[in-house]
Amino acid sequence: MAASNPTRSLAIVGLAVLLGLGIGILAAFIAGGERPPDQVAADTTVSTTPLASFWTVVLASIPTGSSGQQAAQEGAEARVEQLRRRGVAAEVLDSDRYTSLNKGFLVVFSGRFAEEGAARAHQRELRARGLDGYVRQARR
Image (cartoon, rainbow, N blue to C red; front, side, top):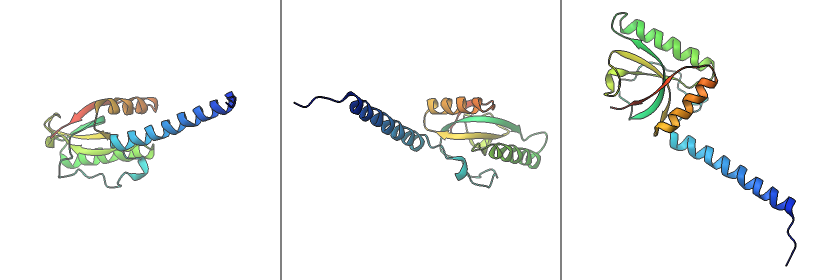
């Protein structure tokens, strides 16, 4: 029977841990639906087709009533552009198209996640970058 080498065993365990961590991070991106900032579409117009249900971090809610749709749209686009310059993936949705959201707002949000826990983790990342937001489920 060959004698074991503790240094070699430790190196193998360390490599296995790093490999597992890398696979876990990749799986989280795939399962969570989060898109890296460099893959965010440049168009910030509000989609006319509702998105599928998802959890997200709301970073701004801009009322469409008193200021009008055009002013709200411009405000939402400006906020998204500001966030993208900071490297944050951000989009806009019309709250009127979701039953789980208060009506009459354009919502600037970051991330689309299948589970609330993933959205909360993203919220913590955003807070660490100085951004305040809250987790909500957008459900049609």
